[in-house]
Image (tube, rainbow, N blue to C red; front, side, top):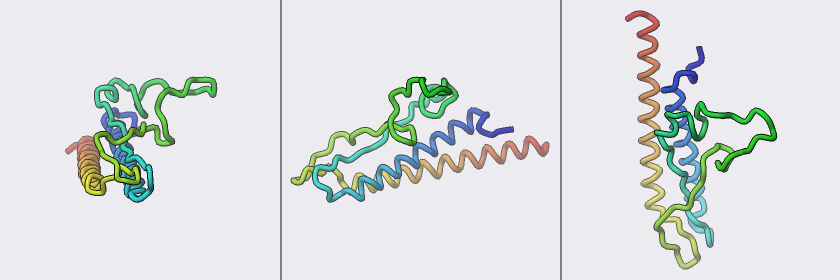
Length: 134
């Protein structure tokens, strides 16, 4: 049995993949904190309702099985859409990265990832109990 055929595990996996991609985006912002005219980026959040319906990134919806299929609107190799980080002023050199904000986002992302890993572990433990019979 493939665990990712179980919808719960697929949702948790998607959340962890999104958090990993967001952490990469935040790291890129921090690395470019002094780059002139660099605009801070973030990832578009996952829509839980769409994921439950099988729509969106990596869900159980339609998949391209032919090179002539339309690719859709999702960008990036990881399938998550980058967006400009909103409501930030630019420094005199045009850079909009605020290190304090990026560090807060990094901390939030790490806590969310730890919570997702905890859910995944608990679900595995419940499966083990069910298979063993108590």
